[in-house]
Image (cartoon, rainbow, N blue to C red):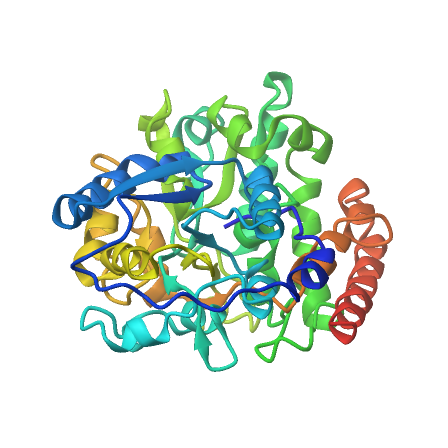
Length: 436
């Protein structure tokens, strides 16, 4: 899930004092609340989640009220609530901010309730998501979902300019070749072959870096190889994609999704959480999804292990540390995260499941549109967990500034600028980790 806004560094200092002890949870048959307030940031998921919540409400007698808050304001309001003691009862957590909230005891520890819950076995969920929401020996959120990335293309544009559709055998070089053909042929029409929003890392350039054998942050969360030869090779491919596609000035002004839905670009990469935006678009019949291209690093003409990678991330259902009725809130998120709730979430096309081997239903949730690229990549590619450290947004935001990749985005015709940006990115990430 995409991120931009950092939680205030002051949060740690503000929340280190004044914390009250956790409230003992109530007996589930005798809840002390009649309503639970839930904050989320994605309106596309609201209808499906409300339907699932209403099922739980019918059993429990507790009403669930969802509040949809846009991404930036979501974190601003949550931070303000943490400072003022007025947080929502239940809310989504994300990899960018989870560590700060867990370390400052702002989330209710779930271990005792998980141990007493025969619907939840954390071994059944994606390990990266489980571990993300664990601090010390405590679990602070249940895995809500996971996501993968695919290539979206407009068949009408490919047909108009006589370019063959993407296939499972496409490399990134094939993408650049097709992108360039469309951009050149569509010049008089203002059509570009590809649009890459360089501020969208998870669903964009991160995947190319990993395909070429480098990483943004190592699995130890204490290292990076973005400045290595492999990192530079991947980022040079990204540079060429940007160079031969929609200029970043155009992307910044309009956005990749709007450009695509306006028929002005032939391809974008996008995450599974955004399918509904294109499924309900006016020209959805022209749209199709394909596996992400791969990097033929060894030149053998086949996609070998590690050469086609998709970033995955997962949200967590969390509970405020001082909530009035922790058991009622836990029972709600347990319902969402049970096998029944996870299957229903997938079947309704809300998102793919956080529970392993439950997302197949998701691939058939969008009648008339084949979205199997998002599930197939789990078997035909490699998943890596979205890079994070204790203070992800410190280095993540810095990578987009002058002195780093902004220089390369603005001058994509010069390979040397990108190589320098990779060196600078290496130092930015290493220094940020050292200061954590």
